Image 1: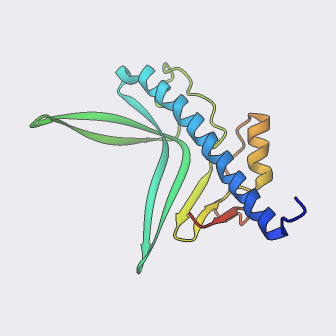
Image 2: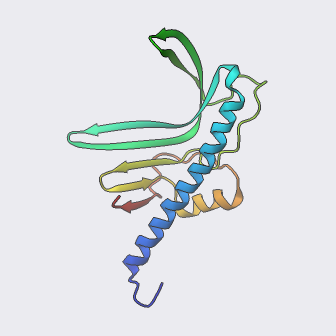
Length: 155
């Protein structure tokens, strides 16, 4: 903390740094998943790294980002004009075909971000996230109601 930095300023700075670290982790992981999906494209399977849900209550809206491994099979249903018609068939969280190469490690499995007009809420504590970053390991997914998350106000 600098001489003119208040405890609240320090907390805001730490939250901003925390969200920045999460964004960096997500971007690195997504890049690896996209490369992996290119490699397995001919198999007809697709590994979706994030599931997005929008929840509305009255005039309020929140967007939830669930990070994990969600396997799909893509079924082609022909063309409509110049657009390919496809259907995404959810297969689960386990690799559907043992002959597929193993997907990249996922240090953010279980991470849930809630984005609303108040800012970003993260379901992991600072300690849990930093443990995943520095240990490079994948912890078991936390319960969604852990209450240990961080919140950044504003956009």
